[in-house]
Length: 64
Image (cartoon, rainbow, N blue to C red; front, side):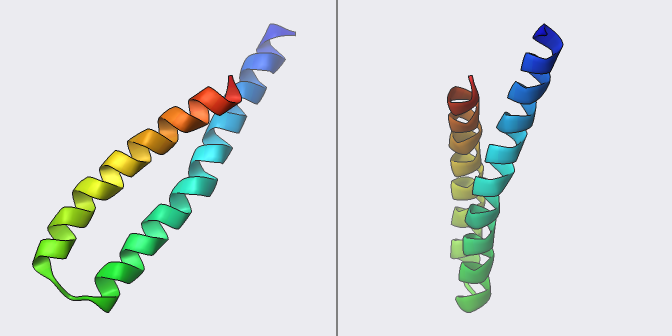
């Protein structure tokens, strides 16, 4: 019974994270393709990293 719970919990964490993170990555990909700017590319790397970390924490909190 416990193994099913943990398997389901990890599956929900991974599924929630990837469903939300694909939108973030897609948004910044299109933003960089639309506006060719080196400063924007540098800034978006940090923003994507921070947002993905927040989404991962959110996925864990929702699934537990």
